Amino acid sequence: MTLTEDRAPSARQVLPAEERHAAELAFLAAHDSGPRPPGWALTPRAVVTFICGSGGETLDGRMKIAPKFVGERALVERCVVTLAGERGLLLVGEPGTAKSMLSELLAAAVCGTSALTVQGTAGTTEDAFRYGWNYALLLAQGPSRTALVDSPVLTAMRSGRVARVEEITRCLPEVQDALVSILSDRRVSVPELAGTEDAQVAAASGFTVIATANLRDRGVSEMSAALKRRFNFETVGPISDADAEVSLVRRQATAVVERAGASFGVDDAVLDALVTVFRDLRSGRSAEGWDVERPGTVMSTAEAVQVAASLGVAAAYLPTGDVLDLVPGHLLGVVRKDDPADHGRLLGYWDGPVRRRAEDGSAMWRRLWDLRENLR
Image (cartoon, rainbow, N blue to C red; front, side, top):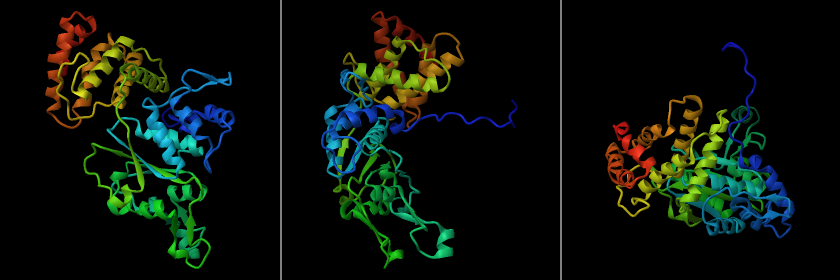
């Protein structure tokens, strides 16, 4: 086949949560017949089970629900209670702590779709929260319902579903504040259609908004006090359990490499060392209790997944020896993103915990210590 020949459509790289976990969602909808808030596809209890898993239990002897979010169950339960009360939910935290993933899972479980999403940017306009117009129809017919273009938020209001706003603080304050009346009055006025039954859109039962915001982003817009009052804030923190983080990194990196058409061939010991480095640099203290100078960049679990996936792809397609030899170079690529001084902090980590572990007799850390020159 030449470059100019048509290629057959390929499978989608990533399926939305409602399609990826369709079998579990259908099972839970039938399994738990308890009370549901208006418009919900699952009971609140089933939503928590969907996200946190069934704890190894096979429900009805038919299906075991795998955990999808690694974090406190109490956090997920508070999120579900907030949504059941039709109140806005704002997930805040460091970059890479799975806020967006949790938002997607909640929306998929509550209303069956995570697609009603607005991506917040400095260029996002108020139309993304309210409505716009099909200008060809507007010029031909004048203002009418058929010429009105619903935003994802307005679509969620009409259908009683969950709207998602990613990176809400990236939006300008005047754009953010379009949500104030939506979350308080639960309706949107369309002045152009005054005098018709379409002049006002009222939210159907079940409508609410999940927004996310990063704590470290620069150049963001502070939310107004009025908008803050209309959200319940929940902080999504880094994974506290090291074994759980290693398991998550392995699972997600494996999925990335398999989508790239290969098998994941990175040794568990390499993954353990990789996650240990990320955890030490993230917390400013090693597992042994040694002080570590934290880099300015965020050493998130999401970054660890990307490094592990890169190691897996390299091992599959560009095998050149021990995959451990590639770790320092990939770590340097992570820490250099924000502050050039972070290069020195990574070298300091090598001269501290890495060297001390090597001196304690660990072959893995001895090899990493020998690779210090790769950091220059």
